[in-house]
Length: 267
Image (tube, rainbow, N blue to C red; front, side, top):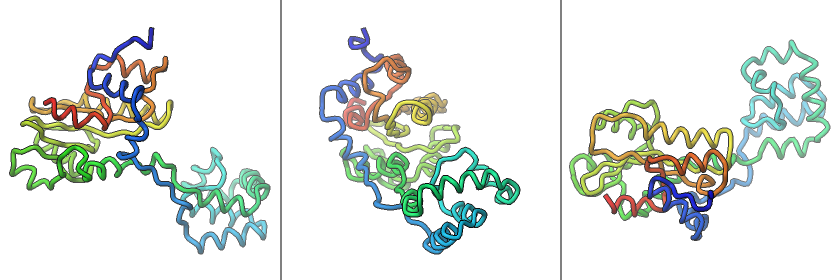
């Protein structure tokens, strides 16, 4: 039975047990403190033009102005094409008329509301894991590259994903064209990996899991480096979906950030 199956990797199992038996989400909030902005910041001058062309029912200029904003107020499969080819607005009046019909029907207040919706929380997760590291949650204060290389003590490397990728290339022979979120040294062993917060099942979220696995699979030229996937979110929910079943089967070090300190201390 699924409920009795154990993960092949003990750290994956510890993460599953943590999610099932402890205040996982409450504790995870210290790593990923989701903060929603009240509104998305937009160019006020562009929005003034949008309001004018909306009231004048000027389809061409309305669409042209809205395409200057980062968020279009309706989801429509033709919008990406129009963003990349503004000339197409003139050549395709029926498509423009159809889209504008939806805009006029919703009214200007609703249009404004949709244009200023805050960014999705999961797109703001990137820096949060690194901020958590800087808080000393692992019992280590992240240090710059020079300090990290000059010493042999336990340490976490402080840097951007690209700078850590370049460091891993020079020191470990890392060849993947993908930045890293975590490089540490503990009891003489180096640990590198990516951090992911997977908020839902399917699509892009599943790709995030695969991406973390690919980083773990990437070959290195040194044997004193351990690769980890620091994954949090829905993957640890017991179910019959492909994501959880793959999690059970993998022998790679996939674990929650909440058990990362214990993992390091086991090295």
